[in-house]
Amino acid sequence: MATRQKSAKKSAKTKQPHVEVRSNTKRESKAPRPSDSIEAAKGKLGVMIPGMGAVATTFVAGVEAIRQGLAKPIGSLTQMGTVRLGKRTEGRSPKIKEFVPLAGLDDLVFTGWDIFEDNMYEAASNAGVLDYRLLEQLKPFLSEIKPQAAVFDHNYVKKIDGPNVKKGKTKMDLAEQLRDDIRNFRKSSGASRLITMWCGSTESYIEPTAAHQSVASFEKALRENDDLIAPSMIYAYASLMEGVPFANGAPNLTVDLPVMLELSRKNDAPICGKDFKTGQTLMKTVLAPAFKARLLGLSGWYSTNILGNRDGEVLDDPGSFKTKEESKLGVLEHILQPSLYPELYGNIFHKVRINYYPPRGDNKEGWDNIDIFGWLGYPMQIKVDFLCRDSILAAPIVLDLVLFLDLAQRCSELKGRGIQEWLSFYFKSPMTVPGLYPEHDLFIQLMKLKNTLRHLKGEELITHLGLEYYD
Ligand SMILES: NC(=O)c1ccc[n+]([C@@H]2O[C@H](COP(=O)([O-])OP(=O)(O)OC[C@H]3O[C@@H](n4cnc5c(N)ncnc54)[C@H](O)[C@@H]3O)[C@@H](O)[C@H]2O)c1
Image (cartoon, rainbow, N blue to C red; front, side):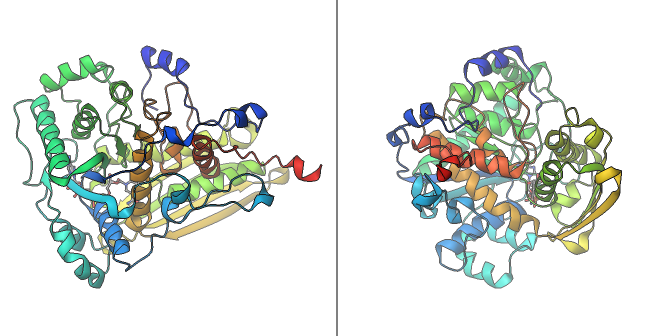
């Protein structure tokens, strides 16, 4: 977590997120939230995507393919997941999309920004993720979605450059242009609600400075063209100023800054991030909790990847890689808690590598060599070889985040809280309020997410205590 600030700390104390898993006491079940504290999902939901590359096009094409009945929303919790309610004996497990009022897929309308001029059909064809025959069926729809000119700074993404870029005297001018784009899209699409979903390239590593600490200092820095304001922050600022929730799929700071938390709370525009949890880190956050559960020690975890898409090319630059590396490395420390278990996890060698290897395109291969030790210290090894498809894993995450962030903004209990920690499930490097360590264990994250939904609807939280079955 990059944001550490006194004022944010203070407000965190008075405004703790209401999402912790607590014991299933009478007090909780007596304090249901009326479901009418969630506004209905009326009208269209506009999805605005900075970065119309592999992930964005796989997501949009996928939504359209599902709408046309050509494919199924596999991997999406909002579309296929269920939530158990009440006792195991009650047999109540509705689909999540029937339990809480989510926007329907037919209500989604799309726009985006990119430094390249390709429309979504061309961009999807170049990304090479989806089968040509499927793309041909979707061509009339995808060709209509054309990127607006981007706010871009080559210094933040060194490996690419493109012609479709806004010009402005100051970064504040650029922010104003983005705000115009947002207002125009709201009008032209007829959307009643909007969401911004960062699917742009990973920007170079930077740390927060004084400029990022408050709205006043950030706006001054925008007017003064401060080098340490990255393009993604300008999109975030513009969105939050327009009251639009923002999710960050990359590891850049973007909304993980005090200024954005302040704006998010002030304008009831929820935020979440960072970095989609898709392939190797997904596996890490499944395996590491298993080692800890069984008190198996860990001496080393070597993770390496090859991938050949544009994301891989961008990550070939040391600045962008450093941002990604930080995001991937934090996971083990938080799950294994070496300060609580020094003999088991006090001395871990953890290494993450990503190598750009064009022949594989979007089909990444991630290897993990894991050195563990058991009873009496005897060593063992585990090897994982995950031949995955990056954007196929990311697309359903994008869909769920869009629908859940929209839900959060319609929900009186969530919209003014800023960071939506209950969406940590989807991120490698989940954002939390300052002073709170992030939860990385996938199953705790899922429980937190589902308990948040139960809580919003006044259902009992599920703790798995279950003694009552044996009364
Ligand atoms: N696919 C995954 O599994 C996965 C997982 C975690 C995170 N991510 C992150 O998601 C992001 C998107 O991944 P991808 O595979 O689609 O990459 P991609 O390279 O195919 O697409 C990124 C797009 O962003 C555009 N772009 C860069 N800077 C921009 C700016 N300032 N404004 C507008 N557009 C801009 C690029 O031109 C490109 O078209 C990357 O940051 C990646 O690290 C992806």
